Length: 379
Image (cartoon, rainbow, N blue to C red; front, side, top):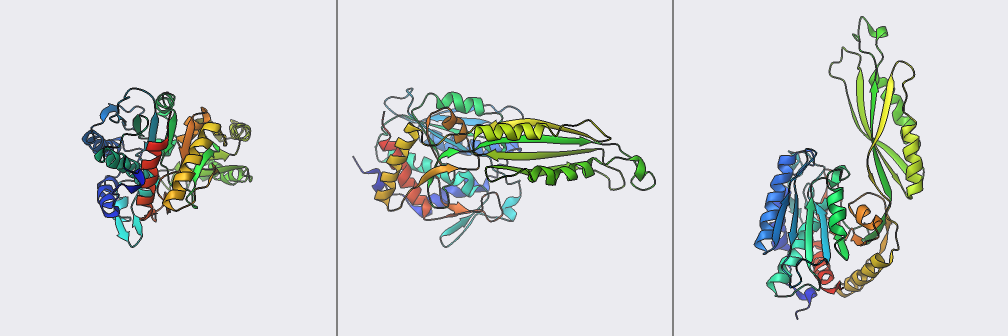
């Protein structure tokens, strides 16, 4: 059997394959655009001989794609490759952040988070199939459309599918030191709305009660609740249509992250305590999606990390493993006690910004890691 680490991975070939992925913009809230990305990936998976299913989207969001790779034990649980194909970048971002290579850096919206990692792991499967190397366990691929907004429409799908498998690989971007994530903090999102009293902003200003002003007072109050172990960030703010009208409605969204579930639960209580109908402006706070804490050091995950570290040593780099902030769909699988290795995708910086980029030489590095993981993770 050929050593998976010796497969002919080629950087230029991978960049050529990645280009249409990045140039197919797929912001979460644009279901049609996300589905064009799903079309592209569905075709590539079918071309590999996989049995591909298109799972219709719901809640106004895009579809999911599930593919079962060819294997003598097809139908049995094995390895789940779990990734998302939605991005935070709106249509038109390519004009400001075009797909381009400059030396060892390649830029593009969604390239780091997380189309690059998804592509690399598919390329590993492509090369294994071409070389006639069968993975130790059957591999299933699941790509979803809504991770960037907390996975409201596909959490149940992810959890149900993951329970069928022994190992879950999540090729989110690698940590800054190139390491993997073996646990994640808990996350909650909140929707806020203030409702005031409209009036003309000039001759009847005193008759109005500004929803914007009331929400603005809450920003510092909410963000000042942040501690070393729990954070609050107001990241969305929508209000007003006419400058000559006192605003009657203001909407906002808050993200909270905590190192433990207990701390998150306390944070949820603190946010819900902001609900108020006293005074002239009403404040309404409701919790939306939540990612449960994924406790680190679970035996199955640590065994996976050990295998990954051994492979990394053979490739020529060190792979650390630790619990981390941020959220991913690994929160769901890890919190279920399933062996999950997260952030094993490409190296890069600037995710969610107009400087999002990857280190080009990490493409081959991570493809080799992926190929060896697919072969060494055993029943």
